[in-house]
Length: 99
Image (cartoon, rainbow, N blue to C red; front, top):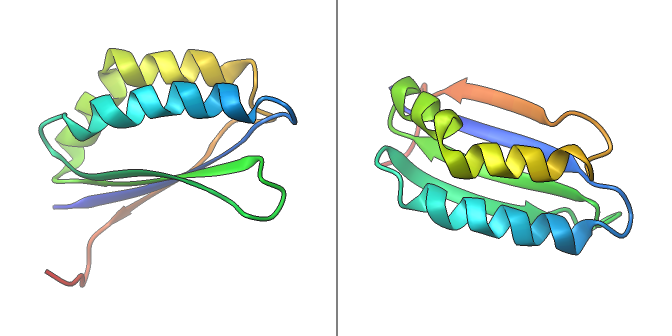
């Protein structure tokens, strides 16, 4: 069953470019993972310090593989010192989605 994850990360003022650099490395590597159907990084327009990951996986096993990857762990370490709080993560399973 497909899994959609939306994760919100807010970073400290002045840390935006550092976060983007670390996140881009993770995004590129994540897109190459088997089981990852879609992986994007967005930036909120108001405030400009909140980032949104939009992720789609083939199943829960693919999510677990992603979370165990070195690039995901490296992003977590990089974000730990520049994030204002723990990420807000929403995990959903598909019910009725377009092809």
